Length: 225
Length: 359
Image (cartoon, rainbow over all chains, first blue to last red; front, side, top):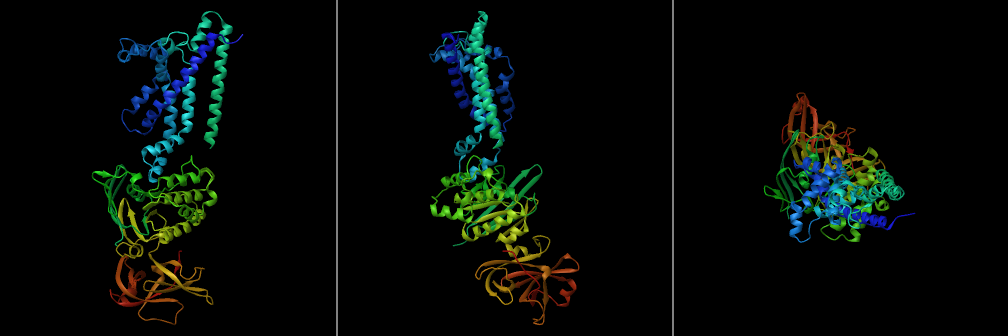
């Protein structure tokens, strides 16, 4: 007994999804976190709240509105159709977009915390040593926020691995395109194939535990430094 | 060529503090911004550095405009060095990495010899491979000073660089600051509330109180102003810059010459030719109409009375004297001043009971 071909397809799809989403989230989340950590804009609270919404909303709610937005009658759907790439729901890239929203707070918050914790002083130091804003961002802010980036990447990746509700709403259950591990487990259970479900579920537990164990033991050494 | 100057006018309004200053400084030697904590010294320094972008005003450095109503040159384009009060080494870099960070961004190439010289001047050669967390407070501050110098600043700003250190560490760093001042020709603005540091390092003194400048000028001229005597510590006194010219091995005395005369003091090992600063308190000077040789007082100097003030205390007079070009202040009773018929222009002998060598 082991993984079936369908299981392996689901695993590969899930890892690909999580990797792409994590990469996109680091690219999108970094400027947002930087802005939030430095702005005195009065919209800061509202924007922080919007980013944090996926933490508390049922994934089906998020999935529902994304489905409407990306569907043929939604604003995003009209845009993607005009661009000639069709609509996103029930495609792999639709899942990517939904996952980016779904995991955004898990990436923005650790980076933002790290950037806030460093304070103004390193930036002032950099400026007095002749480093302009861009120079200081890449050579002082990013290296100093490194622990935040590591946490963000791991949380973003693992959170995307585990999503289910959003996937069902936006992606359905298409093998090789949107059938991720969590959906595959659901299918096995529906088919009363508990043994097969257990293989996948236990793998998820072990993998997630291993990653988080590395994250938290690493975090301690970073704090001690 | 005239001395380049820094001229500034700043206003900074905070909820519990207002800075309102106007000053002209020679860009030469060490200028001390002196005052109690909360007097606005650090705020003024940060304004000069361009780190307070809510400050309004104007700032000219030599012929360059750094700030006026519609211009604000950002800090990184001012080419200045800044040493913060507490350790400010970039924690993700080693000591060497911190130095390289500055060197790479310096406006001019820093030759290896110059780099070595600065490293040696601050005695940090053996520390270069350590990370900031492995260094003591004093070591970190020395690396931070070297780092500021390696950015080839045209102006070095130091915000109480010794304040976060204990007495032993202060004594460890002060000699480095003195050699810095003597060996490099970068002008320094030095914030301090320590009378000792000011007396040892400053050439120009700017005294601040409640966000305002209350007196400024050459160190000794400012210290000896009678309308607003700046006390370094609890006593009025003057600080005389002198050079050791003679050492008397028999009596263990040394003689220093200053602009206007010579002073004997207890030999404390300064070699001939070395600069010393001599602190003379007003309470240690007595005045006499004649020169006496039948006295235990070693230092008796011919002086001219310049000004007399009884404002500090109705029974006491402060008398400003000039020995050559050097001003001194003597404190005596009002009665003695009257008895000696002191008046501006009157020649007099200043008898100095004791002097303190502070450098």
